[in-house]
Length: 185
Image (cartoon, rainbow, N blue to C red; front, side, top):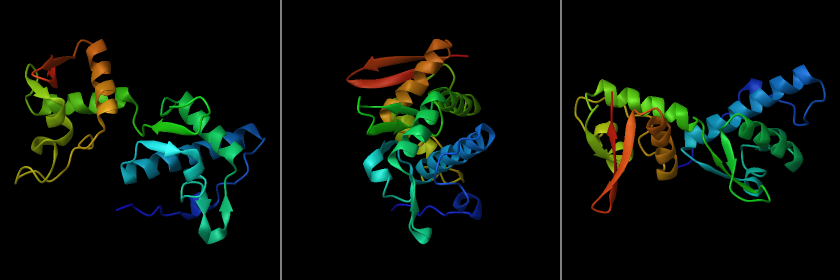
């Protein structure tokens, strides 16, 4: 199920109109960016449709009947694009991918988990990384936590692994119709 977005008093005070004063505007954009990324993290969502978002809890607060304009939403999303957290999927900028962690950050998390679990110099499938028992708290009796990258969508998992490939810490390989990755020290 979807997680309701809890509007803290701080978020309620985010001005609905983008501010002209640069300092105020920067703080406001930071607050909106955090709100969008946290919403997507809480709901494990990786895409945003601008039209839908304008009437969703992301940009519309029913409690106070206030919402962000489409122009203001585009300013916020463009700021997230500059920061590496959003990528437009169409020329009209109506749909975008949302990455609450950049591919580099996901790559670091995955590599840290691989190192901590003695899996350097081993091969595992992309499915095992994102959906396997080893990354899910349900899979092992003594595991208390679910890895944050468990359930990561394939496109983002591949991008994260590509950042590790560029650093010569991993190699993405194909075998028997599956994709896997070998990690290096």
